[in-house]
Image 1 (cartoon, rainbow, N blue to C red):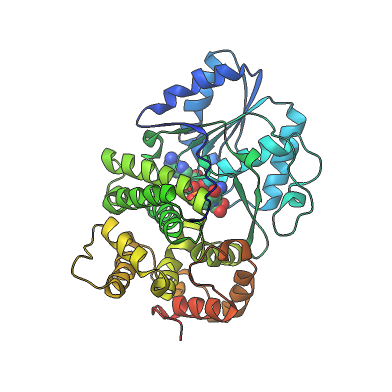
Image 2: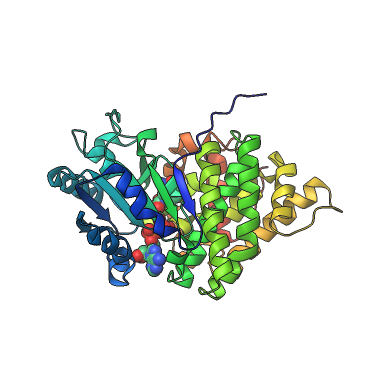
Length: 393
Ligand code: NAD
């Protein structure tokens, strides 16, 4: 049996109203100057103030930074890192979707390092993270990325994405309060929800999966499978929001330990080249990647089918794996996400540049149960253009 390295951290609070744990947790660090990082929408609708208000009432010096954009480019990271270094803060609180949380992680660590954020990137950088940085508390407001429990900060480059990754990017505290997700629009609920599902599915089929991550991944798939459609149809459905919040958090724990694979590797170039959101990039590719690799892990595909509410009892593993792909396709379509790349206005002519950038994601591709080489990647993108599931020949 292979050895699994498992990191289940940070200290986390989940559940409706768990934001009330913020003040006691902040108090433990006795900070003088707190930087709260969020995006303009969350400041506009008052969610950021639900964090800054109570902190200010306690007498902390609080600076609200809202210059965060979705799928943040490296330049956005550089600007925030400079701001954090100059501000001499001693705590960072990130509140928002994955974009704000990833930048909060980056800023808290690079505040105590020299050099630019670009120099710390995984694929093209030359510097290593060496110090822990400022204490950080992360508060997600979408149910999707799991960023609050991972050691990754994703940044967009010209044509693809890259990450800064180190265990020092892990939060000290995560507060996962589903009440903060009620205002997420249906379209974002759908995309982020499929992102969370993809984390769980890819963690379950990963070559690095282990019994601990298997349990987490399947539970996340169950929660998301039973509640994503409901959360998209009615954002005020409290139980659906709770399930999605827990599902996203648990999927985060699973994929942080087991890794993601082909769907994410191929989604990064889509996001980079066509500015399609991370969740939608994953969603449009999910059925095609899983359809292509299903025969390399049919038993696991059958388990995923059952966790999604299907029944593999009277099917062979091969039949169940096919049904699983159909079920994933149905779920993506039911929440209103286009079923093919044409739905995102990606021209056929992009096939080669997507393939070439996809191949570069070697670290992620290495977790696929079916090795995905250049020819496979080209076929999967082609399938996503045509809207037809294909298999290796
Ligand atoms: P996001 O943070 O970009 O937010 C999407 C939109 O939703 C924004 O316009 C935002 O203002 C809005 N929004 C967020 N919360 C809201 C709320 N409660 N009410 C109303 N509107 C709200 O989207 P995301 O999908 O959460 O994050 C995507 C980013 O996370 C990408 O850059 C992706 O690469 C990265 N990511 C990181 C990890 C990780 O482990 N670090 C994992 C997956 C993805």
